[in-house]
Image (cartoon, rainbow over all chains, first blue to last red; front, side):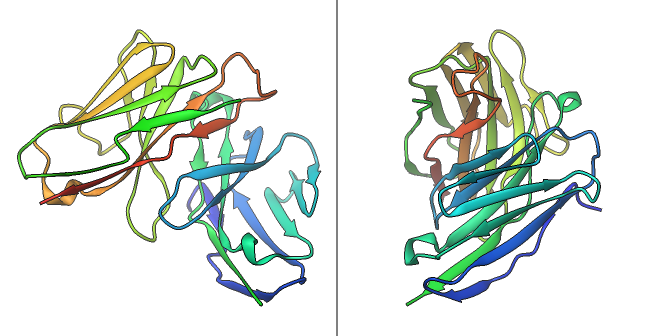
Length: 111
Length: 119
């Protein structure tokens, strides 16, 4: 089993829609969770950190479910500019702060 | 804040040559930097962890003699791809961890990446 798994998508949604997707992790000792956004041929950019039960930043909401070992990302009122690949990343203290990345979820917002 | 630069942004070289890539944290100190490689349509694969003043820690399957890492200061790590071959063509990205917590947590911030093409 991979350490971090994501639904690859693609999620094709119209502008203004809400889209949500999950990321599961296998190591129950994981403590820090992150969502990164990566555009084609660019580096990942930090979208949101999740240290407790969840985090909200504008149209983006991340939630952490430790019991079921997954984090979710919800995007409200989707914009064309939200089209990207969203990477989930997990780290844990025993791993020297290394991040384990999921393969990414592709979101395409259409006009 | 939390800006990481990487140089060069792209490089094309002949097979057998060596290529050096620099990663700098511009506005924070990074005792730990990470080097990743990403092939098209695949996720980031961690190659090695670079610690300031000590030897890098390589992931399983990554040849340390081929991918030389030097982390000489708190703001600079370099990756040298020695005797590059076409199969080394990839997108190489570094990240830096803000150990002082200026950003409030242990996030990693990525450089813009270096696209290497070996002919």
